[in-house]
Amino acid sequence: MAEKKDATSMETFRKWIIDNKLKAVGCLWLSGVTGSVAYNWSQPAMKTSVKLIHARLHAQALTLAALAGAAGVEYYDRQHGPNAVKCPKDRALTNKIPATAPSPSSPST
Image 1: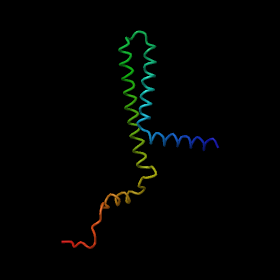
Image 2: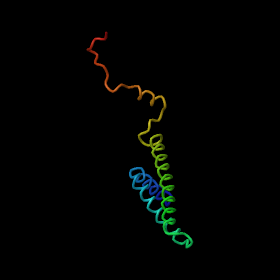
Image 3: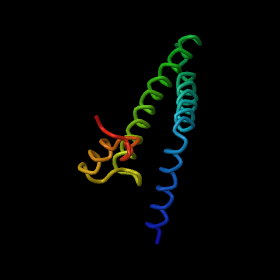
């Protein structure tokens, strides 16, 4: 019973991440800056400006990793999500369908 509840909460979390990618990246950035500032503040030998620069660099690296993760989630969702085309043959057919079909009454020259 607990496994089913965990799977449901994990699926809910996954859906929220898919729907709110930028909020998730922003929250991760904010937590990265906060954590890095807290860690760097415990280093007494560094100047304040160096501490802030290190916090920004750590947060920037974490943000790039989060954006790469969001891109991976988006790619996975497009390939395996509910709207994904399941068969490569069907994918090829959907790419070849014209947007507007020619009308049968028009003569071809």
